[in-house]
Image (cartoon, rainbow, N blue to C red; front, top):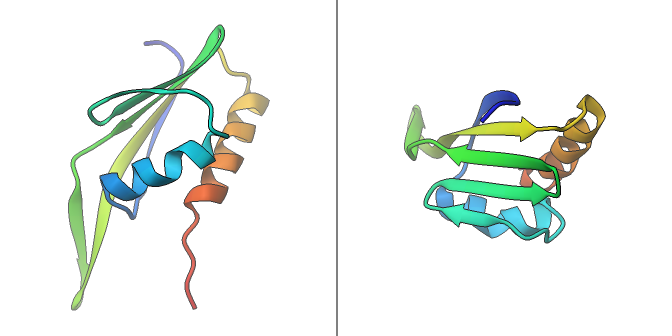
Length: 96
């Protein structure tokens, strides 16, 4: 699939990802095939692919993590940025 593509590491499990995804994409319909999600917006689409689940160990702390690849087809930079702002808002983790 052509389009802009980038990968980021996210600190979560598959279960956490799929639990948060509907709200992050404004309840827009999507298709899931295993660790791959396709979100169609008419002529545009976003494909999200999750890499293997793994654990990052920092001293005695173990954190889940997964590489998440986003591919945007026919999105302008502004549309892509708007999608990612909302996505990041729903996947933001905080503590303190």
